[in-house]
Image 1 (cartoon, one colour):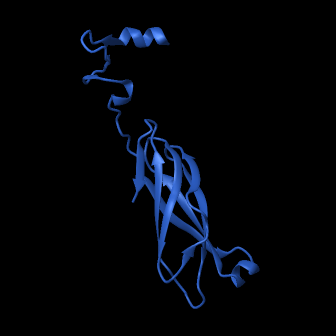
Image 2 (image 1 turned 120 degrees about the vertical axis):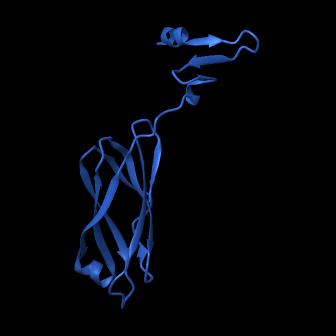
Image 3 (image 1 turned 90 degrees about the vertical axis):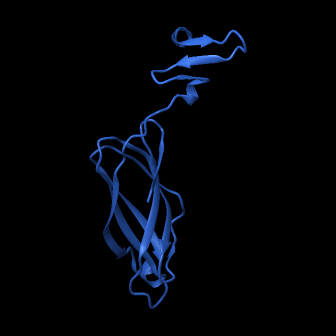
Length: 143
């Protein structure tokens, strides 16, 4: 492998810097070569809302199942839920970040988040944030 790298680089005779040739430009290191950001269209939908047990009902611990779908042609790697902004005094009980894992192109997965719902609250809105990486290790954030 080392011989392959040497066949692609050149050393500047003046300052000794090593440059790697790409099809775009010469760059000072391999880390500086531009990498394309791939499209990762992920969608989120609520699939179920329930009290997991009578004890959860008494303690006001509501479970919400979400479906995350990768609608694109590229795999979404290391998907994770990073936040939840909630209305009506509802708080997220599930610790963040919530690792979801990889979601292959055209596939979906489910994740359950648990919320503490104060007495008297009949409905609330949760706005989730998430992150993922594409195959080129670019970070994508949602929304």
